[in-house]
Length: 247
Ligand code: UDP
Image (cartoon, rainbow, N blue to C red; front, side):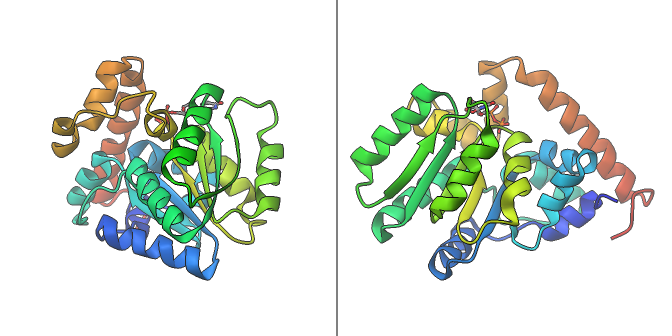
């Protein structure tokens, strides 16, 4: 049976972005494998629908970080507080800098070919210390095959940008066979990191309304956002008032 939202909240990393990065860097130094999930309410609700997502969210090697403001607001309703939001795109930028300074290896999997190639060019230009073990766009016919290749290459960092839940389900499917490396699902981050798409202006980021900016740019996101966030609020209320599964 799937964990409750409260149980996912117990699992969340609640400290600062800096200390969260410290944990990831430690994993990179020890070579331990780690599965980073940058979660929003939609991912948590998927844990209730897909057993594999539930396993991913609760796995012992999972580092669950609060990407969306909805996660932080939801936590406040349950009496759980977070130091700050930790957006996946910022983790990526920090990891590029760390990999550059420490000659760590990287594999990029996902997004359109033009996007991933633009990101590869940026990395080669700006982060010469990164050992780029390989890359693939996210529209290949056999994603499992790409994943098996990635595992055989054993990169230190693997960024998977296929969108939710595809990226988390794919990592979860193969993770038991991973010997080393930090695997992170990063959604649409390659579009931004490549420079081909703008992140929200800083006003939206500072006021935690980056989601609103994304909806104004891509109105088709509204239904998805609405559905998952409303269902999340209902679920939280249910658990808060005791009709959900106990922690
Ligand atoms: N994508 C992909 N392969 C697919 C479907 C999507 O590589 O089969 C990429 C897409 O090009 C985009 C990212 O996955 O770069 C999804 O971005 P989105 O912002 O929708 O992610 P989410 O909101 O789920 O985090």
